Image (tube, rainbow, N blue to C red):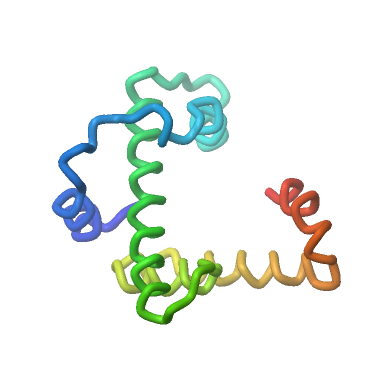
Length: 128
């Protein structure tokens, strides 16, 4: 899925305190569920594999978010938008995912069109 150059960049920029801090990791149950959905029904996933993916996806999210945060600081803004994530992924070389993400963002915006901000949280939680 990931480009080798992007992963190399991520590893080179990773802070030395990369030893897993359980408070910052995504829940392992969520990771396990996503992994199982991508595998045949009879496949099993070792705990080591789940832990590895958990660390990777958590770091990936932090990497993209950090790039978006840098952009916000330059623009003197405080809220990261979907477009900021797409722009950050483009800047970091994840171009293969842009079409999918742009389509997702368009569908999400259509689904939320006309829904008051106070009720969007409930609607957001139902989106898959």
